[in-house]
Image (cartoon, rainbow, N blue to C red; front, side):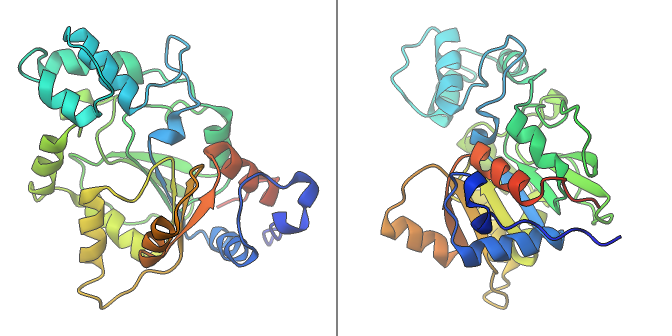
Length: 287
C-alpha cells in the first residue's frame, strides 16, 4: 500500500505549529521525509524538556558547568563548560569523579513527549551530541528498529535499509561511560587527531548526501565542520538544502552564514518541530 500524502501545514492553518517555514522549504522537507532522506542532528536543546532520574530538568552546558564547579568548591561566574572542565579536571576532580557526576545527571532520563513523538516517523540517521539515554528510554512504538553506536569507539557502518535507524552518540554515551566523553577542548583535539573519528566522518558524508536537520544545536562544531569540508572533496561536491531549528532570531549575517553552508534557519523549538511533523504525518510513516 502506498504511503498517504503528507498534509502540508501551510494548508492546515488552524493547526499549524508556531515554527516559521516558507512554503518552498516546507515542500522540500516534506518530500525529503517521504523519501526517507532526512538525518537529524540533535544538540543539548533537544534534551532540555526531558527529566533526569530525580525528576529535574536535564542540565544544559552552563548548568552542568555549575555542578562541576560547585563540586570542586570553586565560585562559578557563568564560565562555559569547557573552561570549567579544564579548571577542575585533574586539579580538583578525577576522571572517575567527573564520570560519576555525569552518570548521576544523564542516566535514567525520562524522555519528553516531543522527542518521543519524533520516532513515529522514519529518519535516515540520527546523530546526537548528547550523552544522555533519553532516546534509549523511549517506550512508545517506533516506526524503525533502533541500533545505537558510540561515536568515540565504534566504527561506522553502512545503511541497513529504512527499517533500521542508526542512533549515534558522537560525544560518548552514558550507558558506556568507560569509553569516555568529549567534554572540553582537550577531548575535541584528541578525538579530532586520533584518526578514529569514524562516525564524524560519516556524519560529514551524510550531510552532503541527505537532508540534514539540526535541532537544539548550531553548526559551529569544529570536528563536524572539518568533516563536512572534507566530504566536499575540495569543492567537487556541494551540499543541498538543510535546516537549523532554533528559537533564536538571527541577524542577516548569521542567516547568510547558514545559507553559505546550505542551511535554512527555521525559527522554532523542538516542540514546534515535533508538532509540525505530527501535523504533516498524523499517522506517522512506516519504513
